[in-house]
Amino acid sequence: MFLTIDLAFIIEKLILIVVVVSASLVIAMYTTFAERKVAAILQDRRGPNRAGPFGLLQPLADGIKLFFKEEIIPNFSSKALFILGPALAMLTAVMTSAVIPWGDKVQLFGRDINLQIADINIGILYVFGVVSLGVYGIMIGAWASNNKFSLLGGLRAASQIISYELAMGISLIALLMITGSLSLKEMVLQQQAGHWNVVYQPLGFLIFLICAFAECNRTPFDLPEAENELIGGYHTEYSSMKLGFYLFSEYINMFISSVIMATLFFGGYDMPFVNEASFSPNIAALIGIAALMGKVVMFLFFFMWVRWTIPRFRYDQLMHLGWRILIPLALFNMLATGGVILYFHK
Amino acid sequence: MQALTNRVKEVDRKPMSLMERMYLPGIIKGMMITFSHIFKKKPTINYPEQKRPFSPVFRGLQILNRDQEGRENCTACGLCAVACPAEAITMEAAERQAGEEHLYREEKYAAKYEINMLRCIFCGLCEEACPKDAIYLSETFTPADYQRKQFIYDKNDLLIPHPKENPEAYSQALGNRPKKESVN
Image (tube, rainbow over the protein chains, first blue to last red):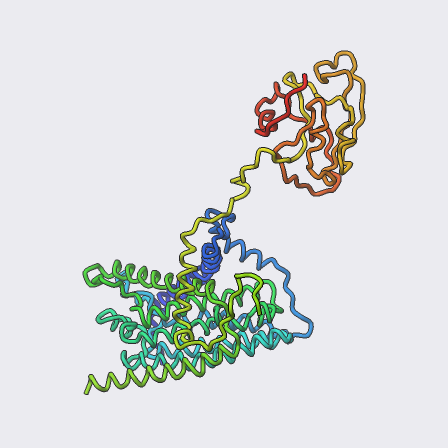
């Protein structure tokens, strides 16, 4: 028996994968640059401005530097796991981009090309699954370093991500009760037709946002790599490009969670106050991508803005916030949403 | 207890109110503060491109002066070396030969003149001591080198460019610093 393989389809998807992965890498690269610039501006400094015009080549210089740094693998570490850690962190960070709808259809060479690598009907579940795997990269790397600071960092990362995943999941259930679909594409189409989900789920969005900060290990929840108490946390023993991968995967995670938040709550590639149907499909798709990227940039700036404003939580405060405030709030939000839906749909 | 100053502030140990325990109002307040810093003027001076203006009495590296015809002023009298609290200056004198009148202004000149820039404290006493207006402190600063011995500046490093052969470099080296009245 032969499967009929649509060669053009495979090529189309391959090109899309390459474009999406390299785009998210480049964006993550420039997010590191933007982070330094934003930090500098918020602190009345100038930030990197020597490499290239406005310092735009700085991320390249950083990358080259990391590649040429000496690679140190500690004697007492488990070598295979030590290498697996950053690889896994990077892999899971990039994998999430597969189900995100980057834009509407484009028409090229007489084909309708969906700007989404895989429109699977459990899209958001897939994202959750892969993001949860991300903690393994941190845990394995931390364990394999055979260093007590790394181990503490890894433990903190694990318990933090487990705690906040719960609240995040429950806040999402409330959203799913409204949309009635797990497919990200479907959600965007619904928001394009009606209002953005943030209008219906402001509390859910707030909980999701806070949890996203915790999942990305961003300040005020950056305890796994708290440099004052844990040296560098889980990446204390790492050097060269392995360290680079860890830091890089953090920025990719940040980018992906910005995209997810934009897609779930802010209409994805929906440009507000513009009727996409009045343009030709290719232009509409371009507008869509631009709209999504605009929202993502806002979120990324917000991530940085918060980082350079709010100090780090204490660990018991973090756990208190996660288990005793966010989870009850998320449960309340879920129940309230369910009640409202029941009342209006009877 | 009686407070020593009127700046004493009582520490507020009241339990947090509901608004404070919600954190969000406080966070928003803080974020507004950081946001306002985006529009603040940055005090940074981009050093190699921009330079901080010096005060008129700034004391930088020494320079050995020439007169308007390009003759060296220094007569190797040694007053600067005596005045120098860091003992950074050494020199050797020599007699001007016939035919060297266009090089040296007076009959005696410094054949060797060295300042150890690692010892120099840029106090300017050499300039004050000099009766011939031969040495003064310029606006040049932050010398950099790879070897310690390069910091012992000899006459080649110290002499001002020739005013006739290279007038531009001469006036630049002269700088805007007010000089003592010429003693001619």
